[in-house]
Amino acid sequence: MLVVRGAIKDYDWGMTDGLAPWAGESTGGPQAELWFGVHPGGPSPLVDADGDETGEVLADKFDIAAIPLLVKLLAAARPLSVQVHPPLSAAAAGWQAQQTSGAPRVLSDPFEKTEMLIALEPFEAFAGWRDREQVIAMLTEIDGAQGALKLLAAGDLGGVIRALLAIGTKECIASLAAAASSAGLSAAQVAAYVTVADNYPDDPGALVTVLLDYLSLAAGEAIYVPAGVPHSYIRGIGLEVMTSSDNVIRLGLTSKPVFVEHAIAALRPDLDPQIVRAVHGDILWPVNSPFVVRMLTEGSERIPMGAYRILLLIEGTAVVVSDAAEITLRPGTAAVMAADDPDAYVEADGLVAIIQSTER
Image (cartoon, rainbow, N blue to C red; front, side, top):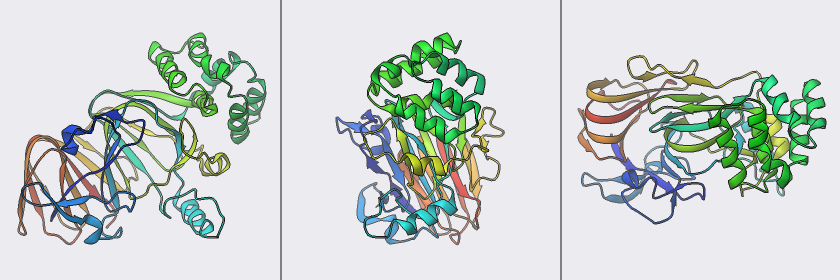
């Protein structure tokens, strides 16, 4: 059993000092994500019993076969990119193809990225496909969208996306909120489109959000996003659990590279996100998920050996005990156990995320 701290990411969409309670420091700048895992994009620092970094990272001890999940704390002050994660077959093939000299660097690794976000405070997102009639109602109100409407009627989703990107002028983007209002969408959705237009007034990808469903999560609720499902997190603080991949193919709302055709090829129109509103026994377990999550608020829990486990303290106190060690966690630190590490027991008074791989 090892203890880690999150590796901080200061992406520009992050909240100013938004992760300071868990990062252990205030930087005066954006704090977007804390990574807990072995992904080379941000391997977690190991810490000692006093919470001080040892100079090693988790990847020095284990590889991705032993640590198959990546856990993040996320603080979004403004919308993240409209994005899609490729399924495993597409990720593996795409990774292999880009090893050729001169090929565009689209992917970060050859793995599938399937994820779940658990809201730690109210959280907003676009995810999955909006009701067709609502899309039509919105596009009818946007100048120049007649071509996109024809392609929608023909069932050409890729063509719709290309058409929207082609007409994504500042005027069209500025009309999103009015189009949402005219389509009879809720005040919260209209406000979300105001946020998109205010933050990305010149980004054609803003129009792609018309195709995406809107959702609002209360603290403790969650959304599970399979690979191939488009989404854009709007704002809020949450806990993300995912397979150990950083493959993000973007369609817009970003200063990073956009790969439209790669993103369209990765889409799975037959899949929808799963929304977890009612949590049974504080366990979040999406269907066919590679992980199970429990948000334990108080009491004790046995964490059996046989699969990868990570226990991340969100608030309060937690003690983790096994035959190998006894560890007192601090908010923002996590106990990590490989599959062959012994059973452990956690005693919590606050909020601790217990995450276990379901792939043995």
